[in-house]
Length: 203
Image (tube, rainbow, N blue to C red; front, top):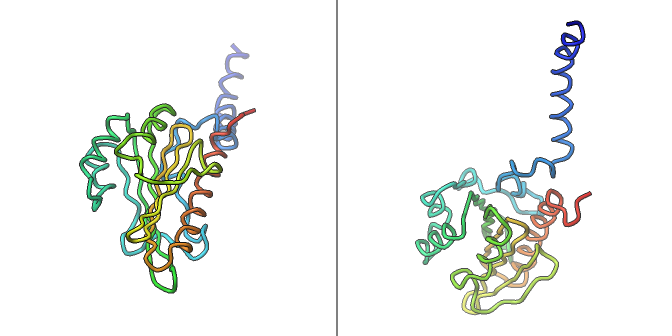
C-alpha cells in the first residue's frame, strides 16, 4: 500500500517531465504541428512585415476555408477542388508588406498540410498546379521550382517537403530581380523551419 501511494505521488512530476521532453524534442510530437507554426515573423526577411491592413493570417480546414485562401485567384474553384482531391488537411495564408524598387509591394505565403508526402508530391506535379514554364530549385524542400510571368514579371515559388506544400507569390512589376531575391529568401527560411522539425535523417 505504501509503494502504491509513493507511485501516485510521483505521477505529476513524471507528466511534467514528459511535457518538457515534447517541447525540447518537437520532432517527436510533429503530428500536432499546424501550418501557421511555419509562418515567418515580421522582419525574418528584413524589411518585410506581416500585413496590418489585412489583419491576421487566414486558416482553413475545409473546402470553404480553402476557397478563401485562394480568393482573387482566377481559377479559385479549380484550385480548391484540386487540393481537396489530394487529401488537403489544413492550410494557412499570410500576406507580408515590403518595398521593391522603392514602391510598396506585397508577398503571399501559403502553407498546406497534405497529410502524406506522396499527396504533396502528386499535387506538386498536377497539371492545375504546375506552371507552364519554370526552373527547378535544388536547395528548397524535397523538390522546388520558380516561375516568372513574362507579361508582368510576377514571381511564383512552390515546393513540397515531407507532407507540406508551400506556395509563395510576389508581384515583380517594380523590379523582377529584387522580387525574385525576396521570394527566394522566404522560401529558404520556410524550408529551413520545415527541415528543423522534419529532419531528413532523424536521430
